[in-house]
Length: 219
Image (cartoon, rainbow, N blue to C red; front, side):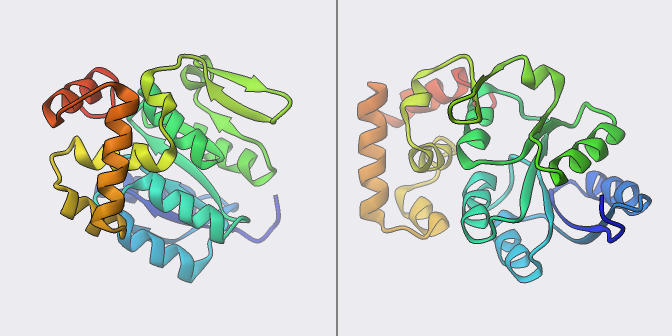
């Protein structure tokens, strides 16, 4: 790696994790934590302002959500690499991350040294995953992309529909989802209709039960 430390923004709402990561990364010659943010909405503006080399992001965050922010960041700052560092390992979360185009998915059960080595690999253009995550992925050589081996009904949804579903199953109203995602209520209603149509589900209670079964939300 270059002798100039790579700039890192941490996006995590657990202070203990942020403090530990900050100390660990700053103790290396390769990385420098330039900011930490606990809310996904604020994260977008901080990352756009600082244009870091790397973003280390929790998967489940307050606000519009990690995948929505990651998607917007990667569209606007293609040179910035995003690595998910999380406890959430359900296939749907992996599918979320892969569809967005993150550079890695590392579980918080791993030693921090594994994360640091993974970040070094990401800086050289590699994709990095925890071993238990990699076991659940296949690689498409034609597209040069990884994908989740096991497909569920959720895999038929678009990324935007998955993001809308994530908010709906938390009990948010259409109006609240529209405000959070900065979309019109009409657009959210349209997404909601298509989601239920694709999944063969007809009410919010059944939708919540389905989301729990598929690992999109905890039981």
